[in-house]
Length: 71
Image (cartoon, rainbow, N blue to C red; front, side, top):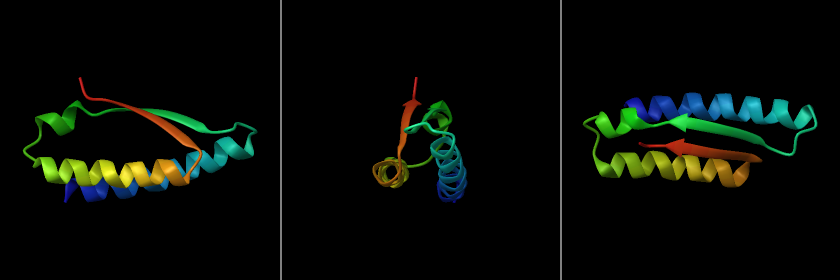
């Protein structure tokens, strides 16, 4: 499923980049994501909420702050 694959890649990249930012002396990593693609997809609301729930868990466990733009 597309969201599962995207989440795994986002998790891997975010973990790596967060570690890099911390090692360079920053207190956190700040990221932004463009999410209009998800609104145009034929995915159900439940899958979108599942995806967001996984991201929310990541952000509570890592010093990483994100803003996702939907429109």
